[in-house]
Length: 186
Image (cartoon, helix red, strand yellow):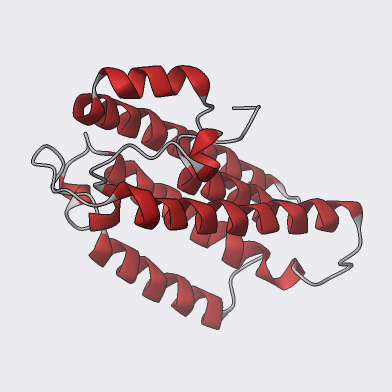
């Protein structure tokens, strides 16, 4: 399904915004923010691509799965941001000047949702992209959701290295007791 003029314009405007806030990260392919930009683009594309189907047959099984994934996505990001603000503090990191301020926590956060997953924000994005995909199952959508999932995995793996370098052995121990993105699964 081709994008309408409005959705195309909205995609361009949002992409320019993402480009602006990711400008530092896009200069450094070794930082997690570089790949996160492309994951954001994939999410934006799929949300807009499937937008016409969001409220069609809302009680169909795929729609119910979609709404559950989207609700979980909101929970993950809300809990993640809350715990970062409540416990994490902030400390500039010379090794990753591309990071947003809220990413540079001074304290390793291991409570709340972080007790179960190390990267709830990326888990939220995974839930979001798969929730958007289930709105309308299609081959182009499947391609975008798989590529974006791989990009988010790369983002998480790079951030793991950054966190290990900053927090040291404490982070290594934390990794042994938690999943990366989704509690009890992955």
